[in-house]
Image 1 (cartoon, rainbow, N blue to C red):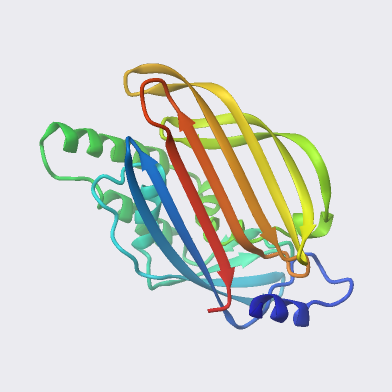
Image 2: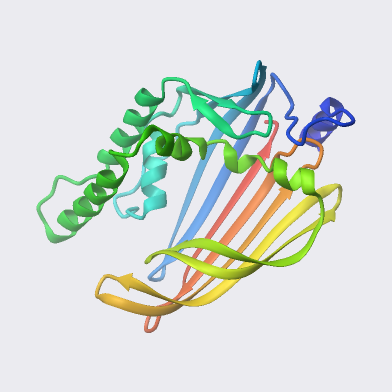
Length: 273
């Protein structure tokens, strides 16, 4: 594997848990498949990332590649976030990372944040029909929550461009036996907390961190409270030498009475182009 080989060449004995290959482009590709109400939709987005050494850690230069625009029916929060990031496609965003790979600052953060919000705003339909008015209302509600965010919260949101691709903590800790965890999860009806099991094992030179969680939940649906079942399975394949997440698989399944299951599978691969 070309990326793994490069990482091993740059890693040194006793080095920190986050030691990415420097000054060369890497490409993260995310493919999402979502099925809801019997309709399946697929989305793909990609971004190019170059890590460079800096005085206090690293710089990550992130360039989002242009992709297909969000469809009018893509009104879940994940689709809106994709639309926000699509507005800054082609622009290189510079994120500053500490030695463990955590984002500490973003160049021109105010300008990047405004462009991100503009991308979500552009999704609001201009029509006056029932469907358009409800969709516009959902978009306004999300913007009302995002617009007043303090700079720290803005940075956390924008840091999602790179931080999910880094797992220095897993690389440092190594293998770990199964243990109980409390897991946040999102479904078509909102966010929930689930009880689950987390474990880290070694496989083929990689560390595989997995989380399985499920539970009965009560969520606010369009017509009031709904009882249902949510299950998630997450797997991250981490390079132990660099702390980079080479592949991630996230699966969420939501079952509600009287409706077909809603599923979401997101797969991200991170490697040299």
